[in-house]
Image 1 (spheres, rainbow, N blue to C red):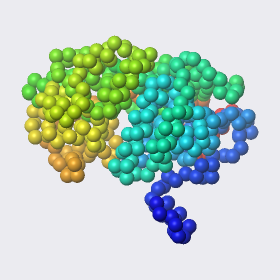
Image 2 (image 1 turned 180 degrees about the vertical axis):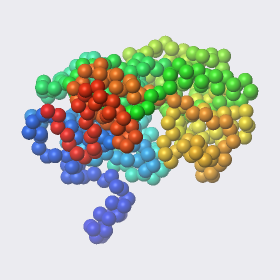
Image 3 (image 1 turned 45 degrees about the vertical axis):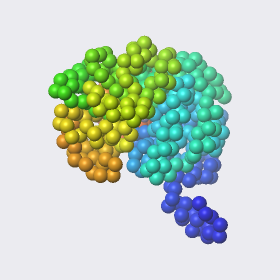
Length: 456
Ligand SMILES: [Zn+2]
Ligand SMILES: [Zn+2]
């Protein structure tokens, strides 16, 4: 940006308009400047009373301080957490963008050491480049650039599950969180209190990973995405999906299955391989590279051989001619999962003319995404043109977040005295979850972003 000869006030005004997320490290943070007098302070930079966009600071009276996750919410426009204060160490639970999207800023501005499992660190690079690409295409501001990615990549310290390390006076340990391969819960023993952060978690097994197991703790910070809602039975939902795929193939159609790259794509391919091995399944999008990294870290997988077999069996699309060939496949699994760009839009545009084909959505479709628009209005923007789609459309619940009952049972099994609910919609999901947890005798806390709480 040209700055010479510009009135500073005008410049500031322009910067505010151009970029709502110009942080001035150390100067614009609203985090308290001194440690708590007593107890343990928690402070949500984001993710306290919303889904995603997570950043949680934990600090004790001796100024031992850490940050758990630093993401952004990939909504339109994206939501960013408050500016993080200086932290020497940050622990990143998993490689979804709502948990690590702001990490390059952190590493670059505060020289923060980053801790995660090896797989989370390995996948981070592609998530950050993809986030950078999307923000350039959609012209959303991002307070970090590609140079900051390099700094963040060199800041990783990786840890295995269940192998503790010391951080100042605290003992830290990662536990399996279910959810996606490499996802961790963090257990912190401060000497006076034991604290467990669930990250995004699921106690149910998926094709890819085993479910999270409870850890005894004093305080549980638990994600409440599905507060008040229970999932349909996994077996029944899987069968419903398999049955529908079979019907589409039997009538001579191709099923287009949009799926998120990190977790869902591999889960769906494994499910198809297990139940419909006679089909021809083509896989496209970033999920191919994620699968490769997952297979390089078999310790994170429930059944590494099952993923390898399914992957070898599927056909990966890697060129334009592969993409054309895939149009004759039985099933195409492709990003983006919410039909926002990516190859899935290209496929939909080609497949939409034949009513024998079908579109099977495999996850939640957020507001302002192509998938949501399709569900609500039967129309979707394709290469700039709002296009009506007459295909059969169905949606399946393949979530790998714990449902209401699983969260309540988990808190009970952890024997947590205090439970802090976060990563949760404050008007719909959180109230019924808070109620159920209170009825079980836990002290329930419902944080707000930007307001500190003290655990005594
Ligand atoms: Zn999340
Ligand atoms: Zn996640």
